[in-house]
Image 1: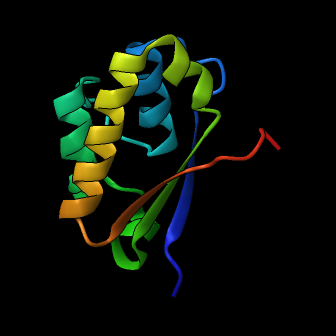
Image 2 (image 1 turned 180 degrees about the vertical axis):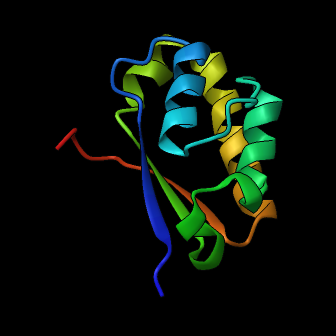
Length: 104
């Protein structure tokens, strides 16, 4: 069975708050999600808050349209990449991929 693919589309995201809102929606995180780096790391590493299908199948998060955010907020983007990488390194059922193509 293939992993569940979730798209995290950052089109129009201008700051950390926007990234956290998009992540909360894309991953259907609970209302108590703290919208900070530690909360994102915890949520990515905790399969009990993942979408239901991902718990059994694994989760692939494809981050799209990230370049404008990365260019506008390089320090925040560096932290986001670290959070994604560490979560994927410590959670075998999780993969995070940065889409390099256009928005289509």
